[in-house]
Length: 365
Image 1: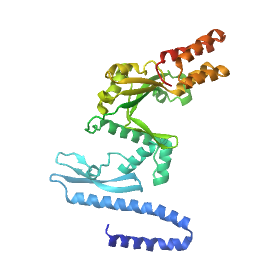
Image 2: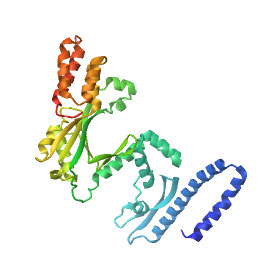
Image 3: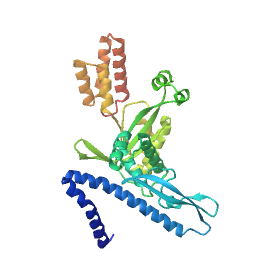
Image 4: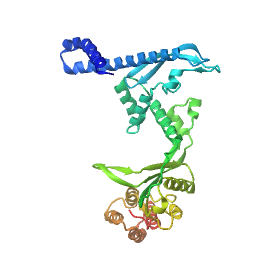
């Protein structure tokens, strides 16, 4: 837009909105009027531009094509709902094609513009799907459901999965950090829809089924970006529903694709101390110079300590040993107090803590 056209547009809008300001004589009310009317005005401009673009396509049809009919389409955009008509063509092979949709990358049967799709995906990465849908309604006046937001996130994830990684050389990094954990996913069956059972009756009768999704995060280091907030550098993520060895093979493939394993001197593996997520498996894959060190998650350690010793001086003693990174001393302490505990459940928890410390004696808390 050149300066002359811009000045003409501003003059036309001033003539349109000036009577409103004289009428309300209040900046807050006038700002609200301009904001609401401005978006509807921009939506009208978008609709008119799309109609003009479609007319230009009708005038320059490829050879062998013909116009079949005109169909209306409504999109939720960042400036509000936009409704327009576009031409459906018949190409030389007899296929019906909406050329405007293809050229402007509007997915078939989608109610969202590309910009609205990216807005929802970006916002949903920071907050819940319901809050994202509510924020989109407040921002644009277009109503979408939280299920639609979830669908956008899944489509974006699928597009990222299909995208080929950029061709680049592997990074030389002396120290790497790897965090692994499991997430239990509970499955549900669609049987309650077939039988039209209320949700609470279905939950009472259904057979519980779940699986552990294994996740790994690999990064080169952390830097503090705000008080209590850290950003991981060179972050790479993977997850898989595989046996332990298959999962660790994927983790090593991810590490080898991004970093040069021969240059890694120390690899810190942070986990909760579970059987499958210890540092032993990846230590077998690492080259000889690389030293693999284990690091226990303090939350899981203190959780086991508090379950074994709910209160009293023993709890403070055990927690102090855990905080100072003394797993063998904590295991000996558990062995000494075991004969003195009469409650069977407490005895099992102390025995579990003792075994946990012995199995992870080489790890740092």
